[in-house]
Image (cartoon, rainbow, N blue to C red; front, side, top):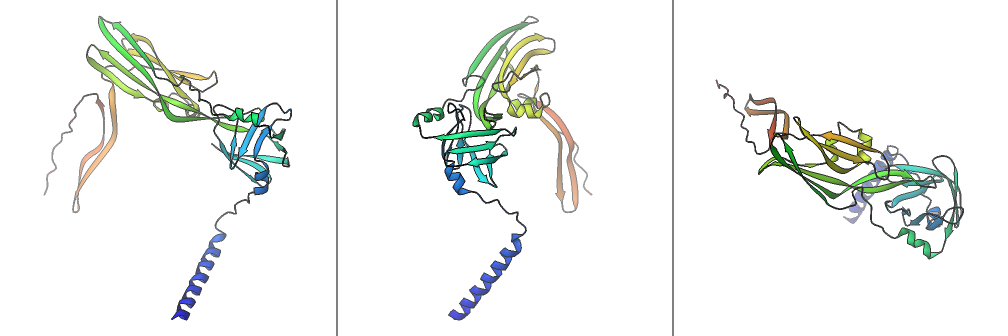
Length: 304
């Protein structure tokens, strides 16, 4: 019996080996990581002048001395310094010893770094509070507006969130790093006396038709300001800004009385009874307003 079991296991092993050999050519070969070079890169590295900290390597991560930079995973393979963050970037290594590291940045320039054992440079990597465009705090505004003998009350509240906005940048050594910021959600409510005319949480995605997609990805919904009131409604300016730059979009919007709170487009519904198919809704679109009840009525189909 044991001989039969051994023969069966041997046959299964051969089959598994054959299957694995047959699949090897289907997978692209992964570059081999140079673990010795990775070990030599551990520590704090200074620029050629020995004054500024370039980065610190610990384990599989590179830490940059910037209050908004996040640790970046790295590998050393094919004689390249590979940073894997928002995107994968490779830097050709020119020379590496336990205390000297030379590579070419994205501009093709040689960057020469020296390792330091001075523990005082660790202060550059002490976690710091990430600065938000809107100072990482709740902002509230209350405006009273008069128009056509009517009194309106506008409430604006800017709420910080934990939604990350990643903004790539290049440091002084020509190395691309990811800076992280946090987006805001803006609540806007408009009242006429005790009647609520409009209330909504606004996110930057609401402006995807007014602002370029690439800009929107790196932008923070920074603020919302009252501008004016006229026959069209109450006008506001939404401020979408890229952190630490002078680049921003001011998008005008004016919620009006009766502004729809929910939009439904091209809804279809069928009922099937055996081979019989009944179309209840066929590409129906409608807008629903706040506190509005809607019923869809129609004739029942005749059954033969």
